[in-house]
Image 1 (tube, rainbow, N blue to C red):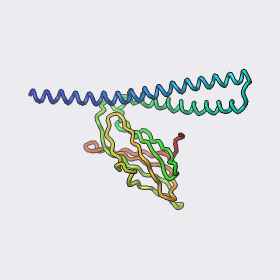
Image 2 (cartoon, rainbow, N blue to C red):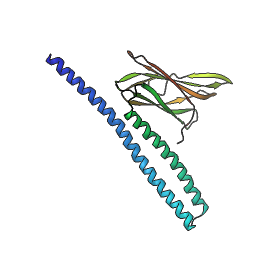
Image 3 (cartoon, one colour):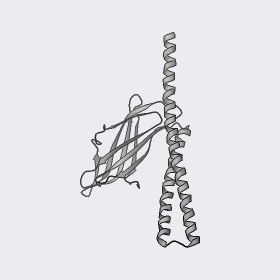
Length: 214
């Protein structure tokens, strides 16, 4: 009985440490995003002040005025993106929904050679009982080649394992690169997540082939 009791206490301690580590990871992500958000807000305020002074003093040329306006627009886009990130992670921490694992989002960034993309796939688990989940993810690129509809079946992603394995309690980022074959024009990308037994769940979501701005 003592041995069973000790094992139960140790198991509870390990599980609690894992949950605290995941919570700390999310909190750290939020802190980093909040700092970046504050820096961008301060920079925006500085630029708006400079633009206002330029209009009042009329001591600078149109070139400077246009440059400040362009920079302000770029900063506003970055601030909006960061605010979305902050809201997203806060929702993960605060949610009491019981929806289980979700394919949250997919970001695509074009490669320099133009042949493919770098991607970032985010999986999250939103439920009251966040037990560790595991499984793998497959990607299928939907598009056309030679004027006919086609699906590019990915067989490998660089040197990484494919299908891509995942194991997490709260969320996990999966990153990699996809190189498209010659003549293939992508329209979207289908993400399929399969859970390991005993869960054995299957999730599917299709994203449009849209590049993120750098």
